[in-house]
Image (cartoon, rainbow, N blue to C red; front, side, top):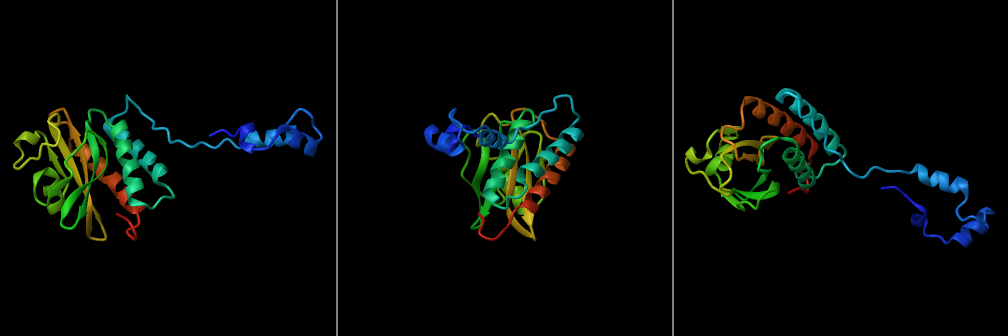
Length: 206
C-alpha cells in the first residue's frame, strides 16, 4: 500500500493555510507522507532450476517469514496451503483436514472442492491420521479404501499434524501424476509442518 495525497483526508485550502504553502500539501509533509510505503503482500519466490532439497530449504525460509508473528491456526494453515500449492510443481490439491469429534473435517485448502468429512482409518488421510505417520502413495487407485474426492488425483502424500501428543489433523497433497512424491518430499514437508505446528497456539483455535 502506498499512501497518497487523498489518504490524508484534508482539503488543499486548509493544509495550505496551515503550512503557508499555497500549492496544497507542504513539501515537508508530502515527503514525510511518501516515506511511508508499506508492503502489504507476500511475494512467493520460485526457483525453477533448484534441486528438490534446495526447493524445500527455500520454502522453509518462506514459510517462517510468512507465519512470523501470527498464532492463529486457520490463518496460518490457509497461508501454508497457498504457499505449497503455488510453489510445488504438479499439484492439483493442497490443504488440511482437521480432527474434530473423532473424524477429519475439511479445512483451508487450494484446489478443487473436496470431500468434507473423512472417517478415521478411511482412505489415505484417515489412515495417516489414525497411524500418526506420513504416508506416500504412488497410485491412489490401488490404496485400499481410497476416497476419490478428485478423479484427477493419481498420487498423494499425507502428513499428520501432532502437537503435544495431540492429533490436530493432516496435511494432504495430491498430484495428477503417478509416483509424484518421494522420500525427499516427505522429509521436506515434515520439516515445514514442524515450523507450522510451532507457530500456532492451541488456545481458542480450530
